[in-house]
Length: 229
Image (cartoon, rainbow, N blue to C red; front, side):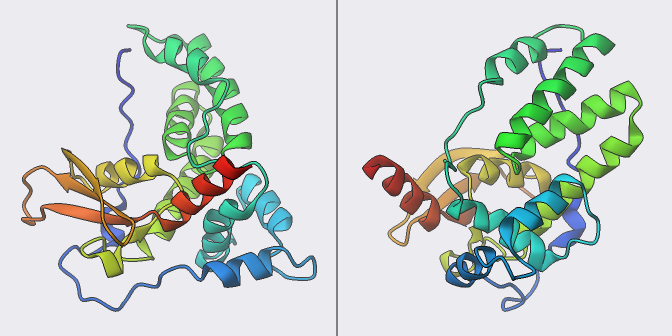
């Protein structure tokens, strides 16, 4: 199967592309960094991550905002990191036909990837599909829950129409993933603005939207920090 195409759970309903401004909230990065490192806090990061890995459906949007954006302040996180299993997965996805044994391998590899990079949407997408193909509906639903909440978390930070309401992401790959979730196709042009936002053009669409903004300030800060180290 040359291309693995899986629906990202129809998240179109969570954003009104013609809606009013002011209903979104940019992440409070310093506040997140403060509470996530306090062991007595209900938002202590290791505890939240344990609940996330266990697919705890009582996790709130606030919990997810701390989980998703807090990963920037965890040891070893790189916005451009790639798993050691990437080549193994690619060789499977490049097959013309996938067998059940292939999907079981995908489950094994993708779970290993997600232990290291817990918010990789494409890997969760592939994992969900593999669970579906092997008949594990419980694990599929758990994966979809986490994937949907991460998308909702990103969308809660803006509408992407302007730099001041740009979507905040912790990975450049999530920019392209979000376009697909919302039903847009990349228009072929990516540029960095003076306010350190990625601007991605999109192909002609019913909303007459030419492109979207993604705030990558923290990604660039993290890249600079890793380069210094």
